[in-house]
Image 1 (cartoon, rainbow, N blue to C red):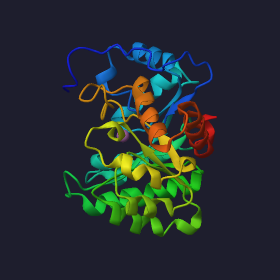
Image 2 (cartoon, rainbow, N blue to C red; image 1 turned 90 degrees about the vertical axis):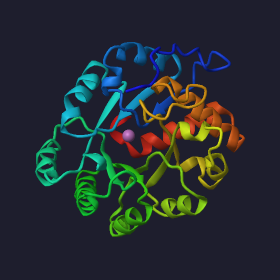
Image 3 (cartoon, helix red, strand yellow; image 1 turned 135 degrees about the vertical axis):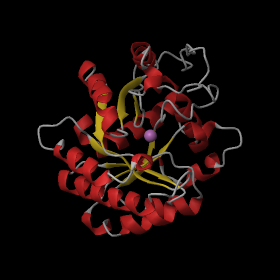
Image 4 (tube, rainbow, N blue to C red; image 1 turned 135 degrees about the horizontal axis):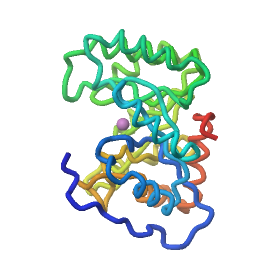
Length: 279
Ligand code: NI
């Protein structure tokens, strides 16, 4: 998929040999075929770079076997979610969701409902269907108590309008890959059960996100890679992987003027407050 032919061997990224730093990559698709040949190395590098857990949001039915096999191999490291990604919503979404919902019967391994949401950036063909699929999966979240992992692209208004109907029912989750304005951050933060997820975009040279981050309190922040996409600087344009999450965390710590270890602890605590089945 064109992430660069040479896999990059990340150096140990921290300036000191920390034994206490614990980072959670709250959003990575390490079951993607981009990792089919070297996922063991990807896991090793993540652990070497202080990543102690990786949350895996699902894409569609076809990605479930690969995701679950990673989790079976490393149950104290990988944690799966169940959901239908908005870009995979088609005419048959109701049947797909009916089959997926059965997988939520206990006992099941899922820690959250994701990745769900609205994406009107590339394609608005299934405008209404995406909204219905989203609402059905919000209902799963409320019924199961599992938090949402929400994807929203060119859809903030529609998303906020839909979610507002669930505000009084204690809806909870993460707004992942945030890169909006201070006003959009404020609007999302008004949903009290939610954290905001930031990734490598924070490190990009022309990113506006460092100017917006101060509007998001550290108590409401989680960090993620969204691997294989959006690799942070200095790996921008390469295949992203969980070991690189440190670069996003370090940039956030710099913006907040906080020690990176402290922010690692805070964001991990935030993630586990929501995703209690990953504790
Ligand atoms: Ni994603």
